[in-house]
Length: 153
Image 1 (cartoon, one colour):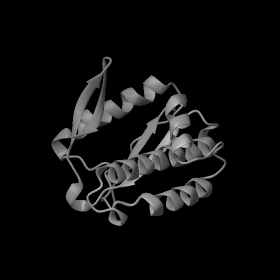
Image 2 (spheres, one colour):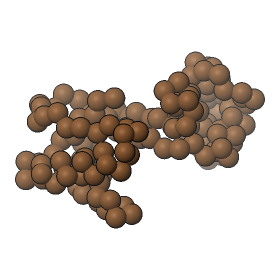
Image 3 (cartoon, rainbow, N blue to C red):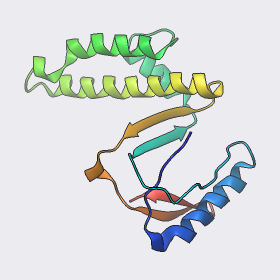
Image 4 (spheres, rainbow, N blue to C red):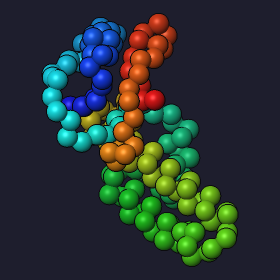
């Protein structure tokens, strides 16, 4: 996976240091390296997390799926249920709005789960969200558990 980060030149060395620490932290399991600076073309947020079995099961229940075999299967069931519960079909019904949001979140979880199954033998959830240019935020350093990192903020 290639990921681009837009950072201010003044923070470049600190960013390199954080990437180096991440590389050491994962000890060859995930390789982190910096190629650049390069001009930015597009931005996305990449989220990688370990799956929580209870959340996977709850998402399957909400989407009426006993098993999840493919992203296509998840999208198909989401579209079917979303058409039934869409808030535009029941204006002013807060329960419909809440149910619709839960369906969307369940769909996102299961799609990330499917992608994780394909990419890493099911040990990770992978979600990529495109970010509009006006939503791009500057990066800043954070420290988590004694390891410095970079986060949106």
